[in-house]
Length: 312
Image (cartoon, rainbow, N blue to C red; front, side, top):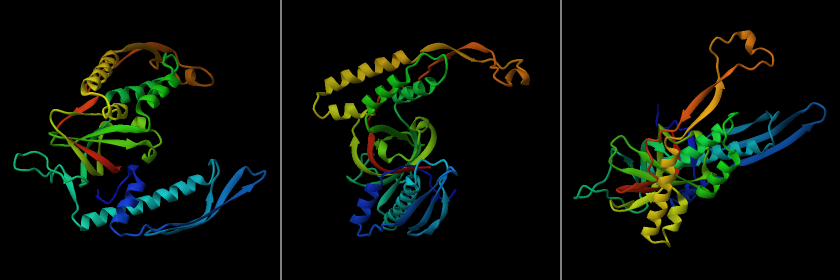
C-alpha cells in the first residue's frame, strides 16, 4: 500500500490551515454552489451545482439526495475533500523541508540515550492506538445496552461518558519497539468517524502526524482523562494520585463483572422456526469482563503529541 493512500479517522483542519499559513502557503477556498430542488408528490429530492476542488477538478452534475437529511451532507463531504487536499499540501511541504521525524525508526536520542525533541517538532508515528480501559468499558456498556435483557441504562452510560471525558478523548500509540509511549488528546469535533466506540481498541495500526508538546519524565504520569489533566494544574500531585486510585478501584470492580443474558439458541432451529413473527428460543449465557490493561495514566518516558491527523 502506498503511503499516500490514507483513510482519515481524525483531522484537525484548523491546525493544517494554520501551519500552511506559517509556511506562506495560501489556503485556497473552494468554490461551492449547491441548490436543492424539491419535488412535491414524488418524495424525492435532488441537488444541482458544481464544486471546484483544487487538485481534483470540478465535481458536479445532478446528485440524488433521496433519503438524505439535507444538502448539508454534500457540503460536508466537499469540506472534507478540501481538508484532505490541504493536508496533502502540508505533508508534501514538510517532507520536502525534512521537517519531521518518522518514529520509531528515526527516533532522536541524546548522549544519555534519552529522547530528544524540540518543542513543536513535527513527528509521524505508527503503531497500535488505544483509549483507556474505562472509556472502552463505557463504550462496551453502551453497545450492550441495546441488547434486550441486559440491565444497563444507556442514557446513564452516555451521561457518564460526557461528564468525564467532555470534548477530549485520550489516546496512546504503542510502537513496534515498545519502549516509549506516544500520548495525545483528541478533540471530538475533529473525528472523521460516526461511531468512535469501535475505533482505537488496540487492534489496528494507525499513523499519527502531530507536533511534540512535551516529554513526560520517568517519575511523572500523563492521564488519559482530560478532567484529571486540567485538575492537575491546580491540585497537588497527592490529590491527583487519590483520584487516580479511585478510578483504578472502579476499573478493578468492572474487571471480572459477570451477568447472565438471554441469547438466541440456534441449535436445532429449522428455517420454519425463523419464518414469520416467530422468534428463536433463547438460552441464558454468561458474559464476563476481562481487562488486561487497567492503566488510566501513562508513565514516563512518554511523548505528548498534539495530533494533526490520524489515519490508516
